[in-house]
Image (cartoon, rainbow over all chains, first blue to last red; front, side, top):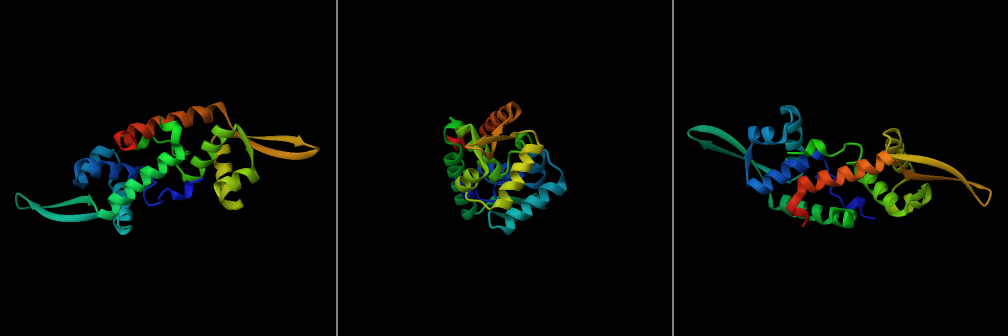
Length: 98
Length: 98
């Protein structure tokens, strides 16, 4: 059985939510992620840090109308790991998902 | 977004493996679960205890050729929660799973 194939960095509820949103939106800032996920600042910051340290996402600092803006997006590694996670989940849960 | 809908009791890799196996096999003993999941005694025992205390599985003590045999199976609540978990996962991951 393939439970060990489920990437432990990704197999956490809030992190999974972050990844789904970043795949869908390309990039998002902290407040948007917080609003869309409905989590606290501390909780979100903790999981963003874990994903960044694990190489799954990267932080981008830009300016929007002269104001600093911090956004998050997937790294190429993060994209690959998310795709691999989905494959493992489908292998594990197989027919239950159909 | 529905990350909070993913049942925290079930959203753990080994526990997910246990549930899938119990749905597929009806009931299994400790050694079979250990072999099929490829986990250590301590790790398996810890997650079986969590699932039992959470009301998802129940322990059954029977005799097989005069030898005591302990098996695990889903409770009706466990079956419902597993089905709800799958629904939440499909809502969260949607098109990625197709």
